[in-house]
Image (cartoon, rainbow over all chains, first blue to last red):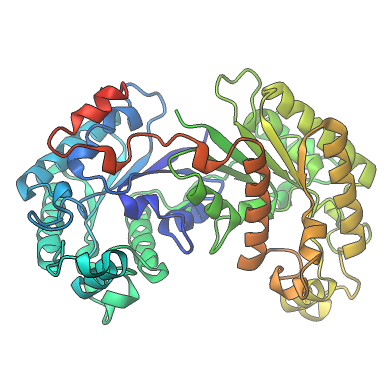
Length: 243
Length: 243
């Protein structure tokens, strides 16, 4: 039985197997070492994600994930009074919901590596262009998300990680270190381009590697083909107790 | 519990989550509908894959896969007396091994959709260029695989599928319908480019769709975010028996 790594989050997780996606890259990296299980729910906030928690991470499982990424907040940070108002979750509740998620995951498995990923930065201009492309003149002129507010959620996400002693990736900060991040990393001001996916992938792998989940050091399932003796293929399987 | 679809095969399956990979595209298509589980073993032949069968597809499982792709033969078709001789499996044995695999999968679950995928065509020139790039002057001048021989394996694969009443994708034929398939679909004369991955993805989805495994018709796990009442988010989860 291979160890499982669960990717839990919103659309940015759900879409992580599109062309150049960070989930696909993780699956490739952990090939024959761990199974990557995608549990991404487009449009979900931390408030709504709480309803999924016991289903996706049942307590008392004998095979809980060895690691879970929690990538939520991009929807919580939607502004009240704007187009995506129904998704708004106040900052304090966002923090508390993240705490509930982390506590549940720890209860699910005290050894699970938990990685909180902050919302990405927002390219407000790109977001507005996207809204206009979808809704035409009906698009609100005020953006439904701002980069500043997303940054507040990102900061609190990192704070919760520190408070509860789990890992975090500050994607909001990291992406803004690169000039032209707005178009380089974001396709519609919020979701990720292949380059943006690459950043998530690299940052997550960095955390995994630092936590003894380095793919190169993990055992492969079944012998490498070069270890098989063509004259006696059963031998290596016998030696590994696989026959 | 989501249904599982297993991708069983050699390196072309193991690498199916690389950039533009067919495994990643399937995962994206079946997002929130089914889990795609990759069980690809680079360099493996049908002879060696038999040792994995009971481990990957244990009999008596209460949750066997709903579908499995079996994508083997590219290594079996390596020529005797050439560089990859150790992988050569005679044509008749290849057929018999495929039969054993299909019979085992049917025993594992009589309702499982089984899809045999033939080896891809071989671009002999590309294969030779690859060998020279790796081994320099030491590379054998005679190719370790020929397109003609790969075609024999492909034909027998399709025959076994017919004989045992399971589905098949004749990738060897399909790819050669496109002009310039040699460089368009194959990166080193054998493994797939993103365009080549696209062909596998499209052909597999076609078979799945024809077998009532059409993603669009399968239920999503958990309510779509638009069905959640922001004033009473618990409601839809209660209605679905999720609370």
